Image (cartoon, rainbow, N blue to C red):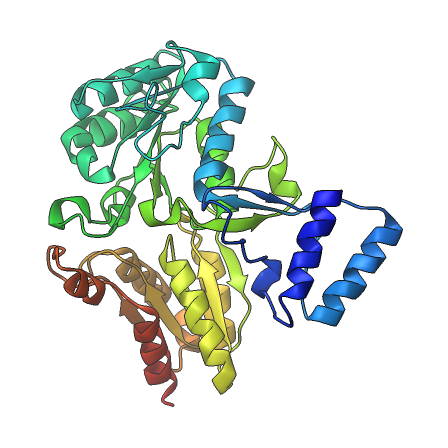
Length: 394
């Protein structure tokens, strides 16, 4: 209690400020991966704290809310599912003794041992085949790729063995396996380690494909994927691992799931619909925060799931806003945005469009290594703002 009171006093001394969405700025001494817990207090103490917050301009969140990085959310999900179901195990390169290349599996090897957390050789085709075979035999493996670029070494196992077996066995052999790891562009890792596979795997019937943005997305989607009886491809983003998000009390429960196939409206709006997934969701929200100062209300949809896609939520938003922009880091041809635009054109929402739908995508080139070229190959906040103004003719 004394520590919480001291933290609050330090915030009050910072002077008037507004923190969006109830997020508290982490002190300089806090490490990026740490967790901030807001400790519940007595009604008298809560009233005093609220008065202090209002006096200083701070908009706090509910006492039970916590700040959790995407990395820690994934780690929680893995821990909870390993504990819940003894059939679940994790395998991949460096996931055990090294705690994972990105520390997603930190502490799990020491807790669950060599039979549940398995280090593999550098052979994606080999250990992906082990995971698929184990799933066919009744286990529920989680197969980690150090990056989804390396999943190309095992794409036959993912698509032909995992994705098609349920259909080819007339529903007799389910393959409950999760393929997860970082996807899309990182920073300065070149063309062979920077591509987005959302459209690649989203193209294939038999697979489910999810793409989290926030900590709640990451935890809820991973837990739902582990419990699903179909093979699920979970496309994370390396640059999001260290980003903290507020996690509601509901999401802290061991039973918290994010349903696969359901998008989330991150911001309500009336003038234009912005649809994106993964890291691009944050860019859309930043652009919306800028545009609202000019009187433009953007509705931001976080897809969460690439396949099956929640077209109904997108259609309902387009009917309301009459304008559509898709934002993604992948290439333009046959991409996620292209699919969304096609589905809107083919459906009833097309008649509500007041302007052509617009796609913002990565540049149609292999990713350059130079930082300035890399930035220009991916949609930035300024690009989204420009596209919105162009679509709205302002």
